[in-house]
Image (cartoon, rainbow, N blue to C red; front, side, top):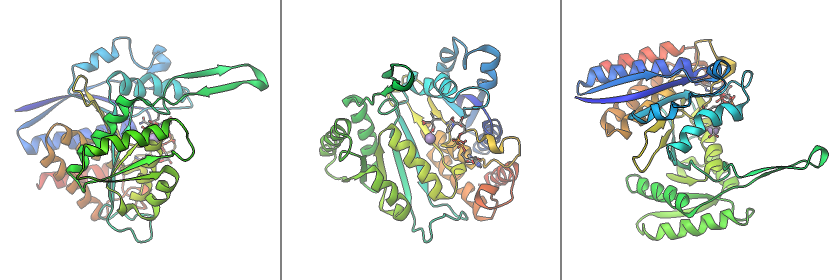
Length: 352
Ligand code: NAD
Ligand code: IPM
Ligand code: MN
């Protein structure tokens, strides 16, 4: 029997709705599968926790997470209670950084029964490899002067190590897919980091002569995501470009509520963290209508990560059977609830 110890952090807003729903799904998979067991431990770290304790996680919080095989996170952020830069850097980004989760892997694909806003979407199935540790999200900078002369300086940091690592991850992934990697660049406008990015891309691509490559400027790439998503397979992007591109990916799938993600620790030193692309959606919190598919598909990425690819594929198939049968939450134009969709997926799983 394989037992996976998972730390669950529902976080804020709809995280507290979609994480328990996904845990029910994972428990069903374990029951159906037989050889797999999950042990979940819940951590209440959130903006409410911050109001009570003055910190997003306890001092030994990260240490407590290291013993887990994986971290299953909902979403962080309640700007009405705590400023985003405090809550996100105190929990989500802290875990990504401290646990060296240097890759953020984010798929976008056409789904059965879900209408894409694209007029005639051809089959698209994209995997964005987002560099997750530096780039535009560096904490190098500061503010100088005061008053009307005040200036904020934000530096973007691109190291060869992290850039190569993201690119190798993308190339390795593409060997199992369509053998095509697109680099998101902006070397026409950004004079240091992006020419460097292009140079590293060229260097790494030489190690993979069988993989076709192309570079696209991020602005054009964003447009092609909308007009010709089927042209792409694996895309490697810097932290910010990858962040923006994957929200576009979510939008062309049909809703940000269905887009999954995995923050991967490549060196195996720390647990990886699985959290969907969407945030805490304060506007629909407590209404019971949050789409649980982003979080459930994220659970599929967690299964894949632990070598349970067959189960992962079955789970995605069950999700698509459910969307194909018309169980859609309001963000997809339907009137199903979070629990309708979750129960339908659980019922599907029982038939596999
Ligand atoms: P958001 O993703 O929370 O919401 C954007 C829009 O998408 C909203 O209209 C929301 O209702 C909708 N939406 C999102 N997820 C949905 C779902 N599962 N089902 C149905 N509709 C869904 O983005 P935002 O409004 O920019 O951010 C809200 C808070 O979440 C902020 O504090 C932000 O910083 C935080 N945030 C956290 C994460 C994370 O923890 N990974 C990611 C993004 C944003
Ligand atoms: C995401 C989010 C985060 C990011 C925010 C909340 C800091 O948008 O996970 O995509 O930019 O990485
Ligand atoms: Mn984002």
